[in-house]
Length: 501
Image (cartoon, rainbow, N blue to C red; front, side, top):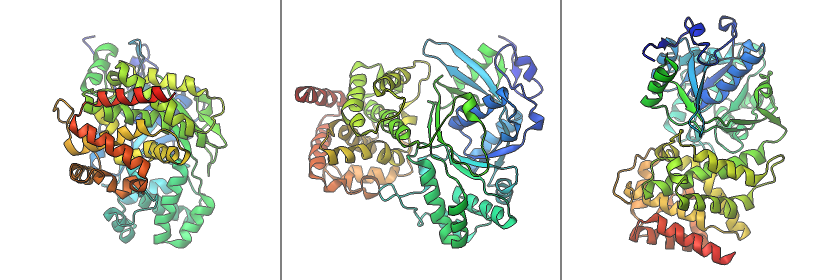
């Protein structure tokens, strides 16, 4: 297509024959949801569900006002504003089919760095029923080993001293809930959409810790009145590339500056626990349950941990994408063995889920050749992910006498990855982690002290005191430093496991 149509509200009718478009009157929408962290995943998940619901029923009170807490969010705000807050979502199927739709559930985007009080007022507004979050694991500011709120964070210290101009989400939530309480309005629900186990409970714990230090009476009111539903969220959403933007233009004839690509699969399991009502997301595929625990544990310990297994081992081997790693027979076999031998035995029963079928579906999803999810993205912020995704499984298997070999090799690989920053071919790896410097310093001591990496107590807790684990880890990390052929070590572990079956 030589001609393309700029994505905006005026041009929507011109796109109706190309893709699904919003069929509702966006001028009548109210911002019932304020969402902090408008990235690709939010736009492929919560905003997608909400937009789909608006196309299905009269749900115009549940529009989304996005909030960015960092200067780096300005680009997203400016692009969405230019497009009347519309964006295109492209679904990439394994057979090469790509389908698209325009999502219209976002109606505004505010930058806290421009006007902190305006964001607080928006959250405190009577229209706001839910404040939802995708702030990544690191945004919750909890100590990886203890799970406690980290008051020594300089931004936390700033927010305690300047509650009218906070930097972190907990400062905004506290200030807005205080205004709601003081004005006699009911509280909003705080809804985490992040891959944090018991994400609602963790959000509540962190918010109560911060609010309790600032205003103990307010913390008591929050604990008694505000709901924090736990949820499990799932949709693989890679970073948007220039080729995605070009594909949208050439194949669909649409000029959109920041589309989102994702897999067709989507899942959202939520505890039905809301302070001031909620959208009927179940009408468009979400599942409401009394207890989300087994679902989220299944997803975190299989999908998210599986990503880390492929991400760290694959990066050292020289793979660049998830599909490239999982279509390598050795990596697919190793991943499935990790799932079967170490992850599954410590999972709870999940009602309505056949775990073998679920694991089969993960291998298929990871292998989608059209997603091309980079291992660099998978590995970013591993220090916030691995304690919950992988190290928790190691600890439970140590307690139960189960296998730890598959997961321990991933920890050894993480040490090598953090120290050398190179694949086995000498290619530099793109490492993005809040604790990158600490990880590097701990890992680079390995050749003098084989357990140096494990001395990062915020990450590993007291694992260094477990003799079975340290013996296993020491043998693996020494072998890896002698010869960074990760495939050889994977093959050895698979062979040894086969002999014990």
